[in-house]
Structure formats: C-alpha cells, structure tokens
Length: 59
Length: 95
Image (cartoon, rainbow over all chains, first blue to last red; front, side):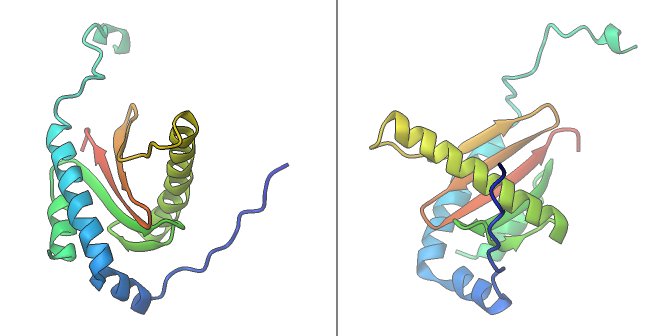
C-alpha cells in the first residue's frame, strides 16, 4: 500500500528571505557551496566513461 | 558571503542546468529551475537523501552523509546536505 504523500505547505517569500539572511543558513551555505564548486571543478574527470564502448554500434 | 551571487556563479558554470536550495523538509528556498521541476527535484531528492542518511546511520550509527554525487547516463546530480538545509546542483555533460 502506498503511503499518502504528506503535504507540507511551501515557504512564503518572506520566510525564504528570513532563511537566506540568517547566520545559520549563511554558515551552512558558505561551506556547502565551496564543496559543490570543488566537485564541479572535478566533473571533467569522468571516471564512468566507457572507453571500450564501440560507437559503430550506434550507426 | 553573498548567497545570490554564489548561486549565480554556480549556475553560470558550463554544464550546470540547475541549482536548488531547500530545507530538510524538502521546501524550496531558492531555485533556478521552473516551478514544476523545482517541486519534482525537491521532493525526490529529499527522499533520496533521507534514504542515504538512514542507510549510513544503520551501517554505523556514529556516521553521517556529507555529500551525494549521483552519476547517471545523462547528467550528474550533486547534493550537499546538512541537518537543516541542502543544496543541489544538476550538471548536464551534453549541454
């Protein structure tokens, strides 16, 4: 049986602004964005590329 | 620390198709995606993150998730979660 999806009301514009300006959020975001930007810089090194893939199959 | 400026900088990186910030209940705080995509991403990625956290905790109760990187055939979804908030970046290598 599927559980009913609980409905959580969206944040109001004012609530969003309050969060975005709070010290707690800013300290979280400054750390998280640094990690994300470093990960993004690494995205070019795709270790999942299949170098053995035979492209002629697609043709 | 300018949140808006940082979101814009991430969004402008080559291949980045979306940046979504939400709280731990999956409520969007800031998103560069349209409304429909934002709702989809917040609700599904919150579920994925909760699951990843519970798996980690069950394996070792003193452990916790720091970062999630999901490589799919079409894109990469990166999630930086914390106790109260999480940031998601979607990267599409074909774009």
